[in-house]
Image 1 (tube, rainbow, N blue to C red):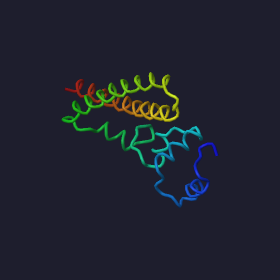
Image 2: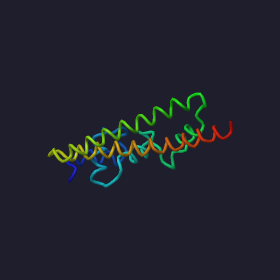
Image 3: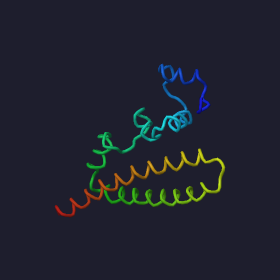
Image 4: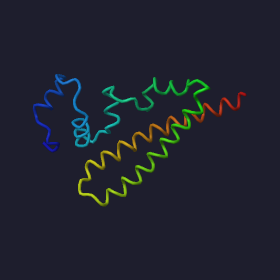
Length: 135
């Protein structure tokens, strides 16, 4: 009732009759069920986010080819810096808007992505250090 999502839509989701729900519906339900949107996408296998349970993604970065290591690291660090700037801006805007729900969801999504990026950065830094020590 709080989410304003039609009861028949929720019934279809619960029964599995809808296999690919719109992301806006998922995001809305997550907000009212107090579930992380990013984790929900991961559980539904709709997102490739890093967490200790995502062995495939973890192994991808642990086993990345040496020739791609430097460019991948620079890319991840760049993304972290970019997201930090965006988050700073969005948090400033949250004090200036009445439509806080959408802004809060956006902030949460960027924070989740940056947690993922920081985990990847740590994996890459460990790999860089190990390659340096072994050379």
